[in-house]
Image (cartoon, rainbow, N blue to C red):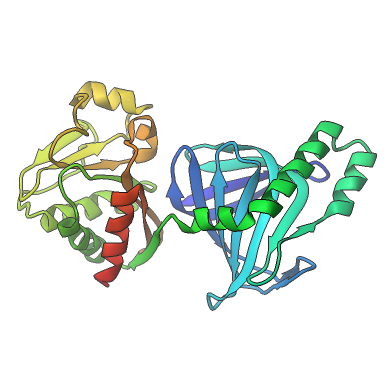
Length: 308
C-alpha cells in the first residue's frame, strides 16, 4: 500500500517517499521502492530502476537498506545512522544523523559522510550529544553489520501478484491447506485491496463451503470446515482490545485458524507468532507479500513458496 518514509534531516528540509509496504508490525516495517534516477553514493553508483528493501525497527539507531540492481543482483547494504525511528500505521519517520555505513557484497564495511557530520557539528546544526550518538552507533554497526544483515534476511518475504479477484482468491486457496489450528493470519492493505477476497479463497482451502463475507459490522464470523476459520475485522476499531471485548479473550487459544482484516488496528493483541499478508494495488494489479513472524509462520511462508 502507499506507505510513507519520512526522513527528517539536520541540514536540509524533511523528505517524504511513497513506498510499498511488504511487512508491517508495531516493532518493524519492511518497505520496497525503485530508484527513479541514478545517483552516486561515492562507493557505488546506483542505477535507475534499482530495488531497495528497507528495514526499519522501532527505536533502533539505524535503518538498513538492501540495494539491488534492476535485475536483482546485490549492490550492497547501506545503514543510515539515525535516531527516533517511529512506526505508525501508514508511515515510518526518523531523524537522519548524517553518518552512513556501507557493506559491499565482498570486503569490509566502511564509514561514509564523516566530513558532512563534522561540518554540521562545527556550525551547530548537530549537537555534541547527537554527534556522539551518531559516532557510537556507527561503530556498533561497523562491528556487527553482518549480524544485522542476517537478522534482516531472517524474515522470509514471498512476493506474489494478482490481476483478478479469482487470482487473489486462488492465493488464499493455495495457503489454506498449509494452515492448522492455532495459526494466525493478519491482512494489511487499503480499502479495495482484496483482503476479503483472499479470505474467501482461504476458506475454500480449509474445506469450507459456506459463503464468506467481510464481518465489518459484526467483527467476527466462524466458519466450519476441516479446520474452523475465525474471520475477524478490525476496520471500525481503534485497538485490538475492543476486538477481544467483542469476540472473547480466548480467540487465539482455540483450535481454529484466525484471519484478521485490518490487522494494524489490532496490533496490540497479535500473538508472538503470526503470518502476514500485505496487499497493495494499482488499477487491477495486486501486489501481495507474505511474511512470517516466528518459527511456525516462517515455515508456512517457505512451504507456500515450494508450492509455486
